[in-house]
Length: 150
Image 1 (tube, rainbow, N blue to C red):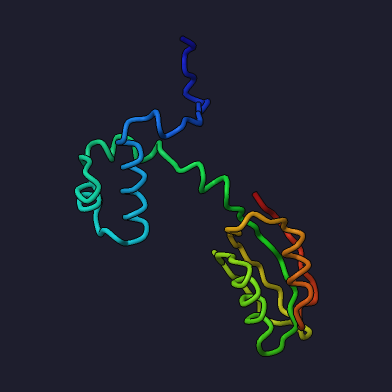
Image 2 (cartoon, helix red, strand yellow):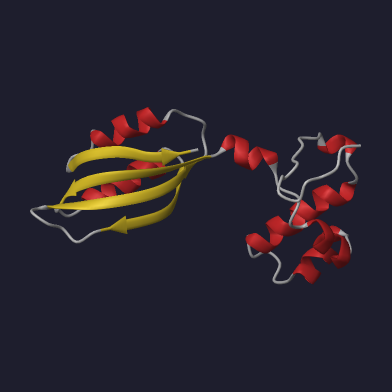
């Protein structure tokens, strides 16, 4: 068996069907806590039927593959006219695309325009260039650039 180097992380993709139930239960505990459905790890562990020691043993090593695979995180930069409702229209368009807005940072307008950076999670798999095209078509949007994306 090859030795494990402390500098190299070894990740595997394994079907949950062949793993002990404790791994799925650890994911469920993490979800319950993150969503605020349970106030403590002890309550969440009790709700799903695992010990706290099992949860703490695995919590930092188990992640849902589908979350990372199916969701794209995009950062974009936009220049918007300093007019009422322009940012609201952009946010409404993102909502209609089923985007989860993670951060919004709008600078103070200069020369009638304001720079805005947004980070968002696209829950439906789609192409970022379509997002740029849709946002560019909104009245008051001067420019849109995708600055990063997973």
